[in-house]
Image (tube, rainbow, N blue to C red; front, side, top):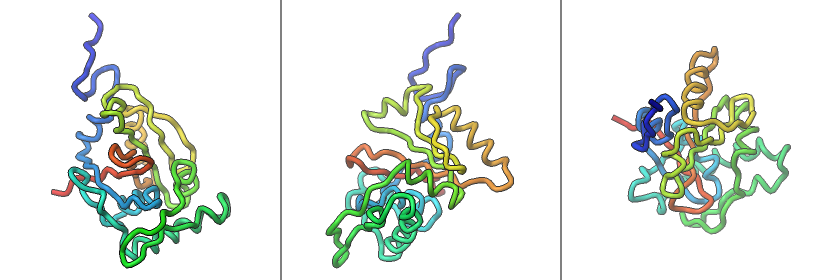
Length: 194
């Protein structure tokens, strides 16, 4: 008898859904400021250097603090040699309100930052009513600590994270996610606090 199709967001012998991976690893989606630095803020949030807001019912009103803006700008400077001065355009806040978006970034920028900061970045995709998150074998963008970009499904990601933990210098795993409420924006999955 062939294995049963699994539509309830769990694992079976054919694979693992991303939704089940997120739930099993006690990850909760958090928002970062939609200011053009979200691709950096997800890294800072994972490192505990950025105050996020739990995504459920919020996220639009979050603003980066002056210290978070300075950190993001410092990270942008590492990218100027490869991407040019435009990538250094930081968001502009006036009296705490966003006046101008910063230069957008994403996986190609993470490919430079991953080896510099020993990161393993996964980009989950909960858009389109979560169809990708609930489909076994759907491939997600992963940027490995060596800067290489690979497409992996949730089971392969789980195995790569396990292998990463076994290394002499395990990389910090960043669970970035496309926002399903703000276009061209990233959120971040963080471990649920007890």
